[in-house]
Length: 463
Ligand code: ATP
Image (tube, rainbow, N blue to C red; front, side, top):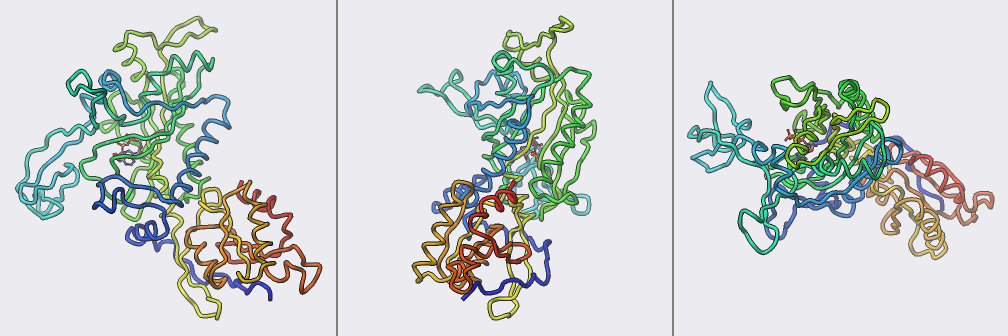
């Protein structure tokens, strides 16, 4: 018996089938993302990543780190603390000004961000109950405050960082000294950030605890605008390299009156989520604002000495700042698709496929013995698992009809399936001994390949 055909191409593809309801349900059912503290009713704005979600997130972060730090001569990394000294966030302007205008609805008691109100016949209304009895907007600071040590007075206040960037600025001088870089050069960081969002919403898109991938790329003032363009292009290329389609990415030039006062240019890279076009990443030319603020407030020099011109100056900076969780969500939305494909009896059925780029897919390869009660097939399949495991995350599955096993992997986006059948054992044709069926998720095409070639074939496709 050889591997049953699954070679008919899927008949129709409807990549636009993603709705948030279907995505949230798939994420829970297959172990990508769960609500935090779910058994206690959930903690609003916080999410836990399950076994597949954590792999997807790691693949994203590792790829960002690879292309941003490892593959570049001009960028080094750091990992700063989450607990932040209040002086840092006072100097950066967060203590004073990191706030959103908040309005309360007196009818249903909802707290709302001012831009969430709906307008009907010229009057602002609560989006929840339609109530018009609203308070005037007041500024609500988004930072999480905590106390360090046993005392809980003014002197012990610390903050959970609202962005990873500030620790990069504060460590600029130390890192400059130890890395002995010349301008332009960058410092990269991936880590948690916290914002007490007034209304967390759209699944993980707006959370209170999330991760950022930030690069502060330091340069001379005259290089700022050019590097802003450079990083915008680099970042767009990144999204395409992880499988986000060009047509769903958009660059918004943030208008002068909406930009931070110190920024000379800001782009938002946006993605067409099922709930609308929303920001994935900001790329901003922040001038020398951050380093100058910290230099002023700390009294410590954060300047750069140019050995050629013998000049000292505070470097300018361009910052591409991306959200890990938002990008994971975009990857899932982008990958989600439903098509019609024949089952083992040839009857058409709806197939749910996550068409992840192989680089991002949580599991790279499923390995299946055709029958679980045949010790030779099982042993061969386990040998293949051992052969591939040092190179990639593989999943062994022996239960259920082979078609069902393929579908289960399609649903979580596994790009390759390997089936060990009787031909592998050389029973039909000795020439086919030690070959397996390699199935491709998207086309459902199958090819016969030698076991010994599997690591190189798969590694090439995953690169
Ligand atoms: P928004 O306007 O959507 O609130 P922002 O402009 O305040 O975002 P930045 O301060 O530029 O966001 O942060 C950089 C990136 O961090 C964002 O592009 C986004 O990907 C991510 N991010 C910011 N806030 C959140 C959040 N509450 N939940 C998840 N990711 C976030």
